[in-house]
Amino acid sequence: MAWSLIPGCWHLQESARGLEKARQQLQEEVRQVSGQLLEERRKREAHEALARRLQKRVLLLTKERDGMRAILGSYDSELSPAEYSPQLTRRVREAEDMVQKVHAHSSEMEAQLSQALEELGGQKQRADVLEMELAMLKSQSGSAEQSFPFSREEVSALRLKIEELEQERSHLEEDKKALEMQLERLTLQGDYDQSRTKVLHLSMNPAGTARQRLREDRAQLQEECRRLRGLVHALESGHPTLADLEVAVGLPSSEEVAELKKQVESAELKNQRLKEVFQTKIQEFRKVCYALTGYQIDVTTESQYRLTSMYAEHKADCLIFKATGPAGAKMQLLETEFSGAVRELIELHLLRQDSIPAFLSALTLDLFSRQTVA
Image: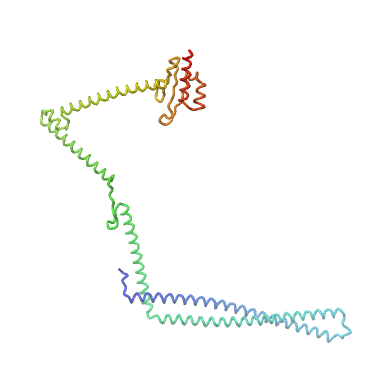
């Protein structure tokens, strides 16, 4: 790979990066100090302009004060004390007050001027310090560049080498991503690494079952094709016998057919006997139910049962129940001419008590009592 550099070149690269970082830091500090120096210079110029304005204003106030004193002196020299009027006295007082205000304002301006001069001195001192720091940083930057033992051409060559290595590394990363995508695609397609993946085979594998069924079907088809070929060969040979056809086609022999017929007849006879036994048992069961419950139960249609009491006065007196619900778990009484005659029993035992056995028992007792009374 292109990463196999000699140790000296690697150390040169590290030293170049360190010096480049130090140079950038020094340049950043120089820019910061230069910005602070410019800001301090602007502040100093603003304070100098303010000091000049204050000096001019103090000079004007001084001149104005001197002029007012001169005017007051001329008034005092021209007028005698007896000639002073109250108005003049008032004006003199106003002039004196104005002079005092001017004196106070002048003192305040002088104080502001002195403060501005002090701040200006501080700003100049700070500007000098910043200029010294800037000079020191520039000298450090120059010494750092001079202490670098390699020429700019060598540094440029190293930078180009680093860029080439970075490009090659990016290409290798792209190749790695492409290989990972290809490996993932192969994994999705069913491929796997045998050294890292263990395959479990199911004992009842559907694919294996399907392959076994396919092999069995193919064997059956091959056997059928063989028999058909034998039949065609027997037919082509001319005047084939029945035994030859049976052997060629694979049909059972006449003895086997007779045996099968006997088995079928025996099975039919057995079924007939079972039917007779079932019919006998069914009739016996119906008679027992009739004797025990007093009702003859007949199936009229699907899920409908007709109940006729042994004590019924007429043959048409019957009740019809219909099986509803899952597996006929619930019985429902249908409307008949006989059910209309026993409304009281229906309302009492079916609607209120919800008991069909109680209703049937009460109906049996009622019909029995009618026949006894009659």
